[in-house]
View 1 (tube, one colour):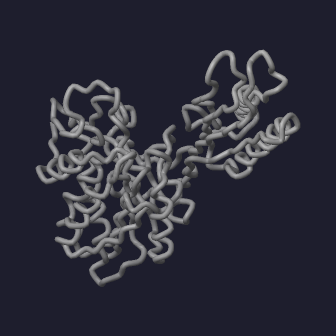
View 2 (cartoon, helix red, strand yellow):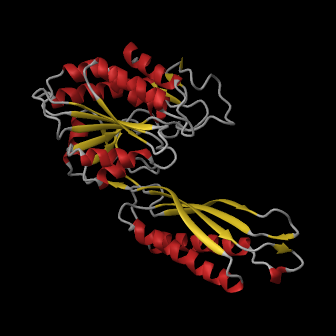
Amino acid sequence: MAAPSEASMKEIRELIAVDTTSRDTNLPLIENVVEKLQAYGVESSLIHNSEGTKANLLATIPAHDGTRTGGIVLSGHTDVVPVDGQKWSSEPFNAEVRGDKLYGRGTCDMKGFLGVILAKLDKLTEAKLAEPIHLALSYDEEVGCVGAVSLVEKIVADKLAPRGCFVGEPSSMRAIRGHKSMNVFKVQFNGVAAHSSLPSEGVNAISYALRFANFVEQVSAELRTSGPSDDAFIEPTATMNVNKFDAGIAVNTIPSQAVVFFEYRSLAVVDREALTNRFREEATKLEAQMQKKNPACSVSLEQQAGAPGLNTELDEDIVAFAAACGAHATDEKVTYGTEAGLFQAAGIPTVVCGPGDIAQAHAPDEYVLLDQLVECEDFVDSLIAQLSR
């Protein structure tokens, strides 16, 4: 069994030990990375959230002639999902090797990838790179690719113009060229409360919320039967679900409030703005119906998270470059969303390629195979060699 280097294991263990669950700050991890980069003479730019409690990191390792534009982005998120309510066989934030696996929250998604990069900082900075390498670390990917929006905007604003990007999400080191978009919504219905024996005096928020939920199902069925399709996906069409419903206070009260949470995941070719507008129009239509009964009623639709799909063409240079670095070529597309679509939307051809299997991500006893970390090390070594020619 191949084993990762001691340097990689050390860096990964340090990353796992910092609890960066999305609800909490990631600043201790980011500040640690800043110090590591400074030790190699690499300065970082931090892009904070509005509260100042979290930050993205953008750093450039220039080419040997000082060039800082062009080159390749290595991107990953720093946050992890909660361990609440999960039964673990070991401490989630203390990485532990058992057999051929490294266990811990984030080992797979995606601190294994980040740890390997940090362990290679000596080689990255010593190499005579013909092109720069940009390191892009984000916050709050797990709650909807929130941080990466300002991170990509910074890359564009600084005119770094990278020719490609690798997002190190777990893909079993396959070069993934496609995934669906991710879109999450909260729709709140404000009706009028009344005693259940006097329904004419109230406006039942649940009734209208259920009509909206039914509309979501109708659109979902429409897209399944007549929408665009791609057989490279397990689910070849857009998928759509009402995932949460909060309403009511008692069985003898006309409910004054109901909240519907739903999401859709669409192919990259789908016009997300047009599709989202269909739901906005339905919400407006239901609001008008409610206000006919009582002008005090209202309906609000809020998009809580969203990121575009990824559809990198086979003939893009970044695909051949991924193969040259040792990524496994595939025509498969994945069901999960990533930040890759944000990079592609900014004109940066992007491939998802990282160690681990998405089936282990977010689960209790999350793990990454040690062999996968070795493959990731080899990938980064090959990337350095390719960029040093």
